[in-house]
Image 1 (cartoon, rainbow, N blue to C red):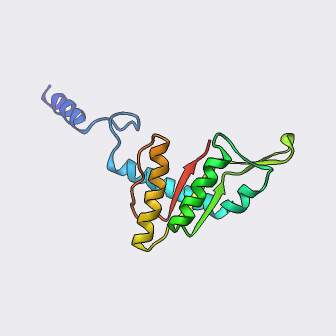
Image 2 (image 1 turned 180 degrees about the vertical axis):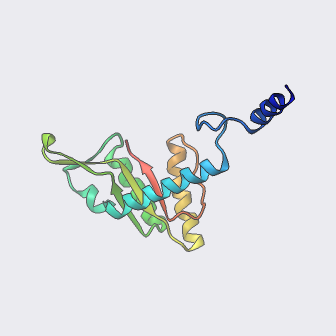
Length: 147
């Protein structure tokens, strides 16, 4: 019976391996961040420049207002973001060939002072939306889900 008790104690101390059991581990958080960074890079690479995309009347956003997102785009460019693109763009022929964008991706500057200004602009937006601030973790891109 002693080996069974030891195994039970060991299992209890190590926890379950099911992804939804218990708090996230450092490895799962790192993996999630790596996946998100890859997705942001892919969306940026396949996306369309934000100001030009917003200027077209056939381009619409899922749930965000064009005016609010236009202000965010202007604020991020003014803060020093080198480029902003819309990604996850889908066309709907049934609605007159309108394009819908699901995400705005900001390429982040590398120069520290400029980068800080861009993060301040992003976090002012997130605060206004009632969300948590974004931390600078050396990422190349930052995404804003619009759906």
